[in-house]
Image (cartoon, rainbow, N blue to C red; front, side, top):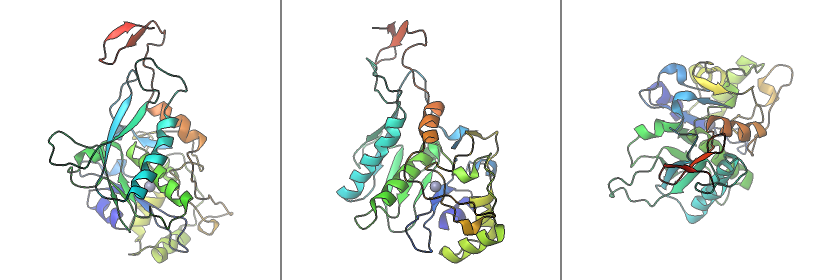
Length: 291
Ligand SMILES: [Zn+2]
């Protein structure tokens, strides 16, 4: 896909597949920036360590988001479903001085003329593929350029498909790689069938090298934080049994898996008070006695 071509040109993006297209899976592709080394291309419930947003356990994480285009329908769907990641990042308790949720997406107006009003994530709605940069790689992209593209968020798309792609792309934006490329994944691929499948179903057809990079490549354990391979992850492609040996298959996942929900808290831990609860931080970061 075009995103893969980009990655080979050392400007990488992740693309995603869509379950709804008969015989033509629409694939999400990962985007990568020029400074990213090849080894870090490709992993998911795994994250690229160096791509995580800078964060402190004592403070919430705020990521700004801007829409570069889109209808109210499209924007509202993003706002609706991204909340599931936000909710997953919470510990289930309220804090006196800080947001309940570790991860907070702040949607800001489209106004690139305002200096300093930068957005960490820029969203473009189109009719082609879907893709996203992984984590902080989006910071290397010019402000007027998208860092996340949605190819099939519209009124004609099944709700589950819209939900899937929004959760999936924001997973990339938080640093997640594709789960089938988890360092511990051991999928019994029928490689020849996989090469043929992506050659026949993608436009332009995927080369062997593209399949190797997007499907078979597994990230190194050094480059990633990861859980055990989680086929239920929102970051997993659907795998038809025709592409594996022994009938192994996975469906399209349309929800965050239990592992996704626990892992996001692991990679972005949040405890605004000290562990012993004798000290907290106020909104300005100043230490104060816990209430
Ligand atoms: Zn993807």
